[in-house]
Image (cartoon, rainbow, N blue to C red; front, side):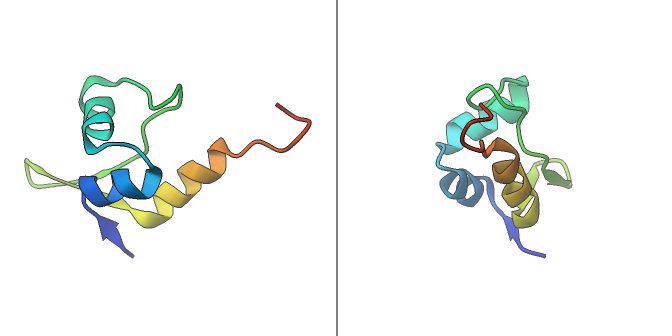
Length: 67
C-alpha cells in the first residue's frame, strides 16, 4: 500500500497542494467533486492511499455519450 504526502497526492491528481488542503479542511469540493478520502496519522500528518486516489479518478471518468 503506497501512502502519498499531500504534495505528492496533489501532484498526482493535478491540483495544487493548497487546493487539496483547502478542500480537506474546509469541506470544499475539488472541481465539484467530493475530496478524496485520506489517512490521518497522529494529529498533523496526512497521507493519501494511492489506490483511493485511483478510485477517485475512476469515479470522475465520463463515458462518451453518457455525460
